[in-house]
Length: 166
Image 1 (tube, rainbow, N blue to C red):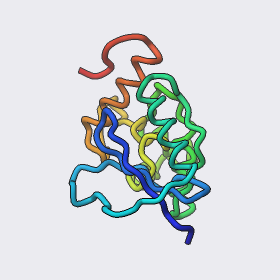
Image 2: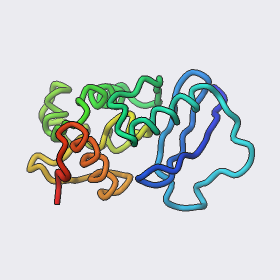
Image 3: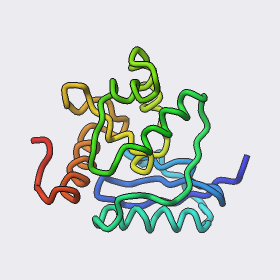
Image 4: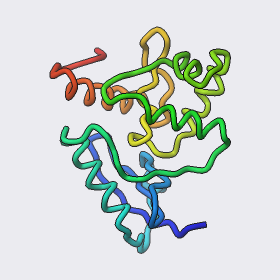
């Protein structure tokens, strides 16, 4: 196992924990509970710095795509789902059914949704771009308010309007 370094970034959607090796981002998660904060010397590495800079640019509406390398452990199916998430264009959404169809099995909708929910690299691996077939906001481990905020942020940048969901 590679040594993990970590840092925290106070974003418009709350405190984010970023964990990385010297080669890739391994986790980008929301910190809602102060007990989740790791105290002590977190260490630094270039990947953490790159990720933080890219997040700053994303939230400042100056970045639509992340270039920082990412990696997370999972089953082959989960990795396929996470790879598909990376293909969803900035400012666009797909349904869980669309996601399962992209994976080649429309009946795998629950499995695709489960794998989507196990994504440990929020925002960069854009699981927030997957919505219900009826266009409703469903299923986001960071909370639906964050999903709504992220989608509205991207939509505003892409379309120059104020809101996507009321």
